Image (cartoon, rainbow, N blue to C red; front, side, top):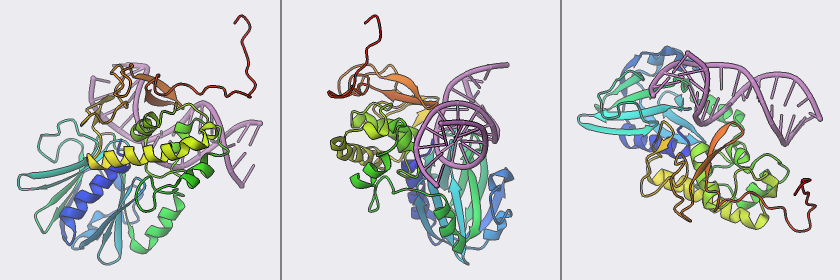
Length: 299
DNA sequence: TGCGTTGTTTCACC
DNA sequence: CGGTGAAACAACGC
């Protein structure tokens, strides 16, 4: 379930280990992960130097010498792991045996660098992809994704931007926030956390979130994503959260107690998505005074 | 063993 | 054209 914080952690790990390193060997065990690649033969990158690691939304972008770029999308269950001697740095979805040796069953691609670091890409579900492409085609590719403002950072979404995006949408606010053209980088974990923090029921029609609550919601998004980045991503295995310092507070914690009010966290479906919330902190939208109210017969 | 899983795309329809 | 809701899809673990 890599979302912005997990991808940002992956970016940071690559930046802090591989900047200036040269690729000297590759092993591809599952070529289909390169299915969208302009250069299906990964050895196009052999001998090239990694010069930059950046991120847009949930896309991880690495820039290489000789005008090449390699993009990763980790999708549901991708993971990158860097190893040298006894040291190991990992970001993304946990693999079944995190302490075991790499490569393992779901490590599909490995890169050896001249500095001794080895980059392993693992993916239990195999939905992720890697694309090697000309550097000058990256901007157009990203533009085509129609990403909205980032969730955090210098170009993080503003209250005005969010207000404009939600204004005429009747879909549940949770689904609007998962729309990458509204705000880029949020996924199912952090949207649950942000809505709980802002005390908004996920089913609330997007346009019905009161304007005075929008600054709270933007703050809650920054808090959820920011906390995720600080922690190096969230650990969710088989629908169960393994919180660090109480975070995540609700996601994948059905039946546990809400840290705010002590009520029991419940799980519902919102647009096919498993959704966790506190029924006390996040009551269903109340029909406002002045609006027409309806009563079922028999009440 | 069929269900659950998520980010993303596609489709029919209003 | 754009919003909506639902389905599809990738493949695996349990």
